[in-house]
Length: 209
Image (cartoon, rainbow, N blue to C red; front, side):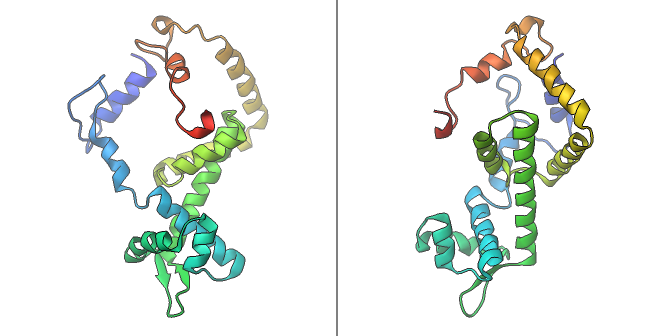
């Protein structure tokens, strides 16, 4: 059994995970959790824009958020309403915006997750700076706090073991170059070569074209 198969079996057997009819052995309803996230990608950037403006100017208005995000004031007003309803954003009698303590805590966590993901992708995994920043931005609001805590722990471990990590990177580079692309003899692949599958995929964003 490959590492991937063991992980899938472990997830499948965890209590509280509801599986549906299988397709390629991995069909489940976990994907629906994406729509149950506390904030969307757009909402996260509205919250972070307010935080940035408060730090830089000491105040934030709808027009300021619109300029920061390069969108219309109408779009900002529509996007802010559910954030106000959720108690993440407060607007005073002068129509100035600020984050509630809950909103500030959420923004701080999102910013930390982006920083950790950017560093791991670029410094440890060797992803170029642009793609590391883009991918971290995509994931920052989706990562669970539990996952983020483990990533922070991993980053601390890396920072505390510089020489060993550098040797690991060199060994990894040699190992990566020696991929045989033969899944039947690979401990990580099943029926197909995972590396070939990713390499053959169409671009996932305009930055990859």
